[in-house]
Length: 481
Ligand code: S5P
Image (cartoon, rainbow, N blue to C red):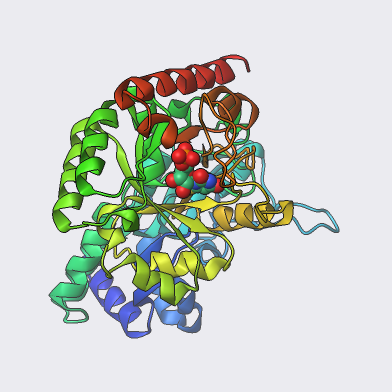
């Protein structure tokens, strides 16, 4: 059978046995995806597995390899088939070291300098291939090529190319949708929605758990030492990247809390402070005259002045309830606020509920891990729980609202409210520190200021003053390291 016919038949077979699934799936990175390609199933279908291995081997760019290494787990059986058919010795890279016996991470014989081909089932960001690559390189093996069956076209091939690894795929997501459509396995609408999703999620970065390292190999800890600019490359969240870029280019880490009661006041405040802020934080339910036009004007101002809209909804209920509060209702928050605040209290379900409502839109949240008010019940145990939640959902959580240095992971952006230059309390429990204290002592990346700016005689002048103080404290912080 010609290669193209073999590929088409293979994809139809893979669809038939349930490898190609449509629905709502959470990928390893936490990203929500409308499609899941579960190639593990082929171990129950030896003939199909053989074809998959044949198609992959046919793609090898180099005629001479000394070794083949499958990326755990699905890459392993495929590499085994290639190894026996081609009489090519194989290596296995464990997911974790055994902790007993030889404690080796790689099984099999090899000699330094040998040329090893990597085999992987699917590539999204390239993180799994990267982890294997790191291990093989530590053993002084030569690793130039990785063959993957499906390239989801979400940035993985480019990420690995920037590290000198050539990724060759048997089929791309676009090609696969075309073939499945041609053979009547899926309809036009399914194909379009998958391709739309891929296009809006094609900017992933490599972030590995084990070494906590990233795209350009910089250690990811030490958030406080790093510039916003350098942190854009360690996060896999497009909105965290956007915020880092705004903060670097506008030289502002100021968020204004626009807690006003009329649309007119809101728009007027946004016009005044817009050029000086990275985020405009709203409590949209305080408005007495909320309308679609209010949101349209805010969106326009955000685009003109390059800031992001951040609704301080402090979601705090079970997943199914927050999904309805986020999307729909009077405010349809998901439609216009790129970022929202969320309490960690209900556990993982709240994140899953919110993510189920975003429908492919780039959206993110900030977890409220500590509160500024006196007597707040946010204990250290609670903070630790929030950090764990954030780490498990880096495709939605971009950072924390906090009062202390709750995380040294540079992917996360810390935002500190309770900031004012002239006051220490407000009589209702709020406690204030200055922007310098927030940034230098408490580790804030962003300072959130409400009344200090809103109630000033000249809010624009006040915004400039807060911006300058907060940004110079940030520069002092990164330069001091
Ligand atoms: O712990 C917190 C968390 C938040 S988001 N303490 C806070 O004050 N906030 C919000 O920050 C609060 O809802 C308000 O919108 C803003 C502080 O306003 P200010 O006028 O006291 O600066």
